[in-house]
Amino acid sequence: MLTISLRSAINIFVFAMLLYSSTASGLQNSFNKKPHDRQQVELLELSLIAEQIDKRVSTLQVIAKNLANDGHIHSWVDGGFLESGESILLDKLRYKVSEYSLTSASFADKSSNKYWNHEGFLRVLEPSIDIWYFDYVSTRNNDLISIYYDQNKKRVDLYVNHQQLPGNGLSGVATSFESVLATLDNSDLSTRGTLFIVDKNADVKVHPKINFQQTSYDLPLEVKRALQQSIPSLKTSSSILTSNNTNILATPIGDFGWYLAFESKGDKIEDK
Image (cartoon, rainbow, N blue to C red):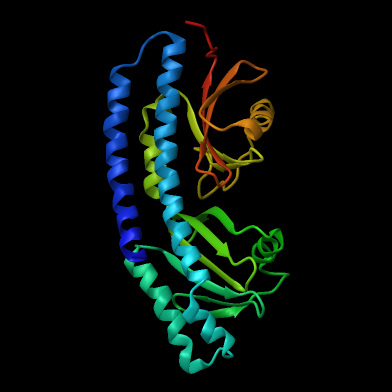
């Protein structure tokens, strides 16, 4: 049942991207010149894009959770990592990569910190080297979602990790994030301002100024402060006005602590 569900989710994601493109075009055609009406259309368009990103992330969360809790894998781990049974783990990781067009699938045992990906055993993870892993384990959060700019392969990947709590299973899956970035770049909103993604602390995850040469970007202080003040109560698409008259529209992406934002200079909210 899980395989059918995940296949369907991926198909739905692709269809939804096509539907979004068509819907966004219709929204642009009905765009009203009044600032208030224009803002309502922009908020709707922002929500549509956020929904598509959430569907992609949610699909990966299901795959990662399934691997972290796989009973066959844990039986092999509990049996002492017998070399003759390593194929149990590797076959499952390789199947996920092939079946769901992933760029990577991995598994770690938190009790020994042994770490595999779909190509085989990698190493025993060490606190001085694999800081992200030990920081993640110490957070006691089930999921870790991140975006990685692969300098060597010139590819942007979305990574979703899941760890058992309680338990020793930790898995990670990755897929190309290029289609989502293309959706942001090709959106009508991108012609009228800047689309970007931040986390609950208003730290930037995706921004046009982030690339393979510059893998991080800090928002202007007044924009970051406005987002930090608004995010704790942000449950739906909303408008935020910063101290320097920059209008920010923002909407949650699912419930995992990311937010899609749109910055348009100089627009103020006006009453009807």
